[in-house]
Image (tube, rainbow, N blue to C red):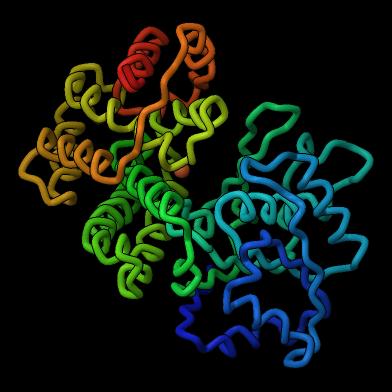
Length: 368
Ligand SMILES: [Fe+2]
């Protein structure tokens, strides 16, 4: 069972975790050094005798090689725990280091079976979006290809919420990560793998996003606190269901046009939203078309709308308000985009999508 620690300037709450640790690998980017929680880690040696080894040698959309480098450092320094103060990318790296740390180093880690090695792992999310602190997934790039690793053992043993980390988040990141969270919740709600438990999380997360949105966008403590929670709960939803076509389609937009993940997924979801509404008769969920219509009504209700058409318009209006621009694609891009989508992942999408449908969706989301 994951432990949750909410911090309100009382970092001593964390001491207990470190009392029996000698050396911790701290996975964080350079920007984390400006956060007040970072000061806590700087003083950890005095407080609990725990040494800190920092690993920051990774970039957004992290590579397998970065994870191997981090694993090497973890082992060389004889660390006995991992802490990530990070957004999605650093969290993915920390998860991989945890999973790789006890594997055979003479073989590629990525090909080996993942076993629970019990290495203590604490996560402090620095964005309100990915919900990675609640999920069993790590996404990395291996030889240029996106790979998703999944194992329950990489869900952090302790998740720490400190809303002050969001205070200096750049505006574009603030907006994009919130949209990622909202897309997680909506995709989880309508996913073929959705169950009663995941739908409770998805419903709650959507309501929390809208309830906290104004305050969060104004960078107020209350909104920041609420959005961190919303992202965590949406993470719990996708931890059960995984995502659907919105996420399957968005990765190539990030690599081709440099859009933030949340920006890219929201653009895909805007078009997918209408497509799903218009094609409920092509439902691939064994629970059938009526079930899907009912789910769409529940999504609309959670978004504060009278029906799903209104909800779709509300979603589009939100993207306009947040100035989430569309990329300008060249004709040759469409073949690349079309073939980028993993058809296997579409099996979790509520309605059937052919490769031609996917290409059409990409075409209408471009900037003309
Ligand atoms: Fe996402």
